Image: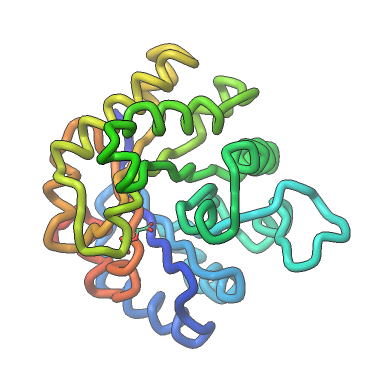
Length: 251
Ligand code: PGA
């Protein structure tokens, strides 16, 4: 059995004070149920959120990293820095990073390997655009993204990773993929992982759905056999709402 994992991706939201308020309110209303919950604030709030989450079951994640350990890379954050501040997870290859900042599948692969080398668990984001979906390329796009993200990653490391299937047309649009369709594509992603690493690893890797998940629809996604959790953007900003989502919709 895979442990469900629900992650909050705050994107470029919340000051340090707002992040602290969120954590206090969230921890007051979230009743742990054995699932894993991860909060991914912006870099500036990682330290404050780490302090407030200490002693709770809720884990800390970052939204990106750079693959080098240190050096003249103005503006970048290294895997060791994330580990130092208390991160367990790091989101890699979000479609906003691929789209706005030109991240390629090769960059994603280097980041995945750097994260794993420092004991950080990558949440690897992938998914097709609307144009690709309408051209019937969904399967081709996601299988290629999986293949390239894991190039050169050892099976024992691959087991530590989480994949977030996020169709780009469903992110922040209020237009989610149907739970059945998300389940179908996630099943295909799992088959692709099985093709690389075998069934044992594929059965262990957790695969989330992301794209307009909220407290009303989360339970339908969690009911699907292939879907192990969710990566939640907009709806993760409200502590009471996210406390419901973190329990898979059971308040
Ligand atoms: P959304 O974002 O929940 O606001 O659609 C999801 C994501 O981008 O991870």
